[in-house]
Length: 332
Image (cartoon, rainbow, N blue to C red; front, side):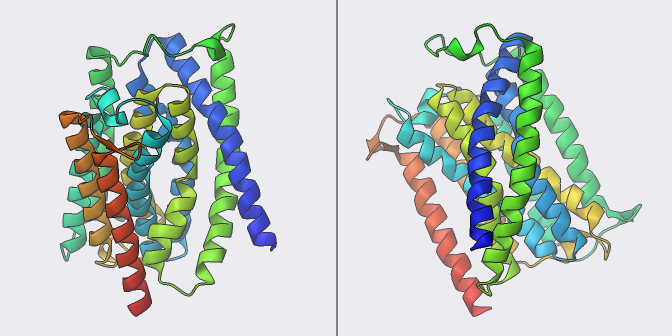
């Protein structure tokens, strides 16, 4: 009962802090003159992905690399599913029709990084440099140059706020206030996120399921709660580009966590000690992001029960993935 109380209270804290985090990110983007893409793809994920960082680092430290990688790919899958939730709460056309196509850049970088990681899971050997595999160093390079590419693109083609979006929450607020609230909200999310993950792990472990399943579903959903709350908060405020940017930006940062997991994993290159079952969740995450890209390009008007066709495809794929993972976890 104590574990469940901790789990629920930490969720409440994240919901409280996540809403303020989104407002402060909007304030920072507004006062600095940077656009919604920057705020969503790079600023918000710095705070919302901290639970994934803490969990994956701890999993590697205790010698559970499958839990670490399952958390990363599972979170990336669940994050894309959030698009369907935004569809439900956003009036008008499907959400991927309403936002700018610039999010294709972030999603494309995520697909490239995920593909690179899956190839290196299959390769039998690697070269270690300072105790870290060459592929993990390449992931670091991917993240640095990817971030630089996003920043340069934002400067060239800024994603500005819709004129119809209310700015009442920005009136009388300074950049300093926005930064302070952002830092405090981030600290609350880190604190609550770690408690959420720890209690979620205890609850999940009591089921007796394997590390891949526990990491890909239970821990992944727990650590993705900050992304869920901040994204929904941004959508409800009418900041749809920030919301979608946060989804793909969080996925981008999550893939960088492979490098962090490698640092804390002493036996050797982390991608050489994980189960090939992660190839399933990695490929599913690629498929879901590809579906989102199709939605961003095709921009369909069709809806079923307030959901765009792309959102329906994402939800169905996620449910099938959960079924497959449960089947694999039970039979293994």
